[in-house]
Length: 333
Image: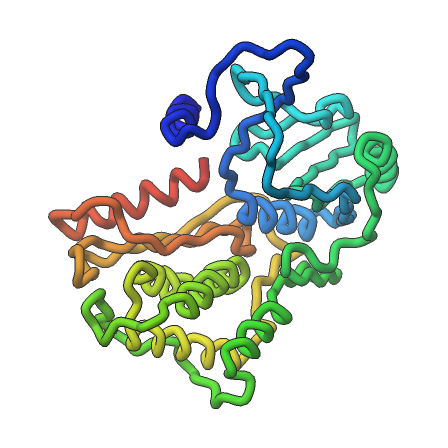
């Protein structure tokens, strides 16, 4: 928090001053980066196993922005403040401030909040109804019923489990890139590829490449099979080449084979964590750094995954593997 405040003062975002007579200051809160989407999959995995009810609320209030011409006075906060959900008896997660849980006797309710969208999972419809009444009193919400579509993620619940995918989002990407009529590829990238920063000729306009990779990164929420490839291409956002763009378009043609492919969360899973990790050694041709890959499961349901270049060069294969194991254990905690 101190680093953020120092940066704002350095850029002259505001000036510390006494409150002028007749002026009313506004308050503010700190907003932290959260690992939201892995928690969505975790909650959905629990819902599938427990057979809980799954609903969605939408807050009617919209937040607008624009150029300010007036003088604005704002108080200095000593730290973040918890939201009004605490009044409902909910406990805010210390690991993810967007997650709230409430235990009332045998009734358990979990909320995931993302701006004005709320996902609610509970073993009691009465608890969901009480929560709806409470939230509507404070924020004026809209009950969207059972969760079916959330942040471009399509949710289909059945007795055997929950399937999540981004079919419409995938088709939109293919349409915008002009690949709806393209011939599908069976594999997204050649084996033992060696794509580097110097491969190919620089693009005259890198904006389409950056937009495409950004959309592919969001698609990895339900498509772990392109996670590694997208992370590789993400390294070249500053100076992409025609070769990098061609590889990205090959991924699109691979997605065309099954645009509705996603993740299935089994209702027959056990509630225990297990994971698998691996690492190459010095595979990056530009930095000689290794790449960590891991997959975390709740029972038989995949809930989290990662493919990321390690922060330092490993001097042996064993060290690269231990760093991968450390990343997976950190994800579990």
